[in-house]
Image 1 (tube, one colour):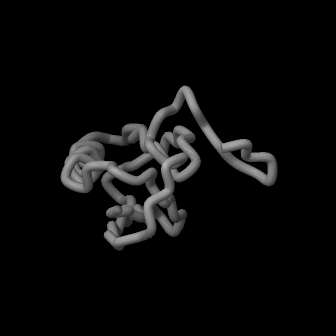
Image 2: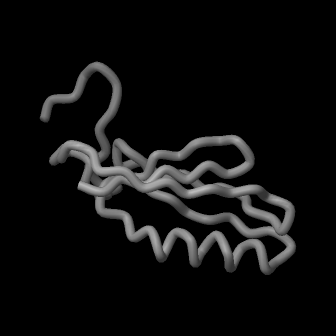
Length: 87
């Protein structure tokens, strides 16, 4: 599976598998064209993170191939996390 890590102003967000890297980049670029805008990301564990991106924000995107994890499918209705996963 392909996994994206977005680092925005030094804060790393490892995105849930199957996220569209081009869409993430496009939304970050659009936010920098405003005075500031929250960009919604779905991170590993199927959790939602909203990151404020401004024209002065520094962002980097890295893409890596990682092992498949069926729990990490981007479904916000079925989050997983911590030591008590039952999947």
